[in-house]
Length: 83
Image (cartoon, helix red, strand yellow):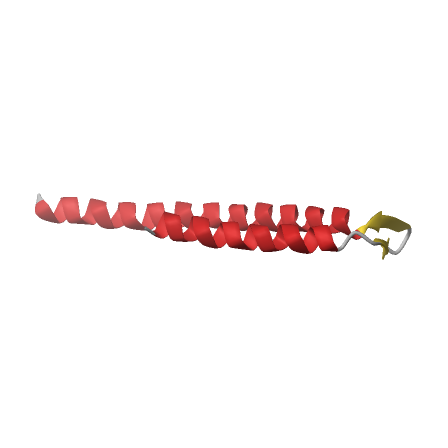
């Protein structure tokens, strides 16, 4: 049930992001200090969404590994106690 809930919430957020990106197509200037880039806002927003997804995946993966280690150690302790 949790996976379905996450899928629905993720789909809604993705849909909102797509609508927001499509509505913001005006060119904007980004100043990096040494140089300035002028790109359509849609490109910047898409890149930022992708970067956000990569960061979320990275931290989510790290949490899953920690959970595996934690629950694995609990299972090992239970097995030892049963013997």
